[in-house]
Image 1: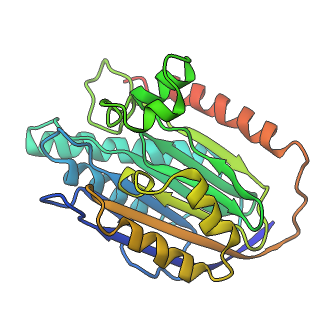
Image 2: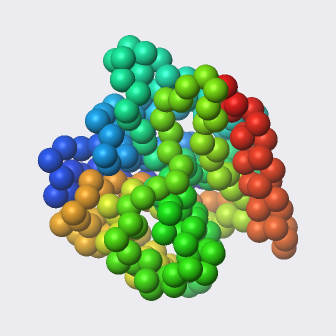
Length: 282
């Protein structure tokens, strides 16, 4: 399949924090439509050098994917190699600084000849919106509160203001040789249509708007830039650093969407996570 990306919009702001620990690639508010992959990272609070971790991962991924031909399939093996390169870069930075107290989340999207590869670690989030329908994909945070919801120990409403809703259960960080690297949850899909849009964002963004508001904003608005400007305005006073990419899909050619696409991609996601856990053992 051939995916032509339309308008791409972004912001990366400090919010009400003393410093910026978010990072993005490409680092621009209006990336060109020829860009095929996007990265959002959020340095983990409570560590010394969150901004170092987020910038290191963004730069390493950009370097690792520099020669990839996205007209073809971006394979699971290529994704795992990319992730290894990013973790290796964190390990090198740790040795250089003689400090391993830094970590970051990851939200990643690539558009290629077989559809889209979406991946995340931590609580930076990915959404896919469809006109007049709403959210057709939303990543599931790797967080303590989300685990409590999934186990039925608290409700989704209780999770919103939970005192530990900032605790994540996975992150990208330097690790010792006998430790495992955190696996990514990876979702591959060919269920992409012209008019769809994808949002990658840190928790400083999705903490400002709920699912219903986001769905209305990006599935019902006739003007994608106006909708994004509304999002930016609502996040301007965020208590946290806030970073987002909105990627609109202009055209999709030779698409044969399988009716069971969600089942197929979920299966791939699960198996890839398992493979990654084994391959990342140090």
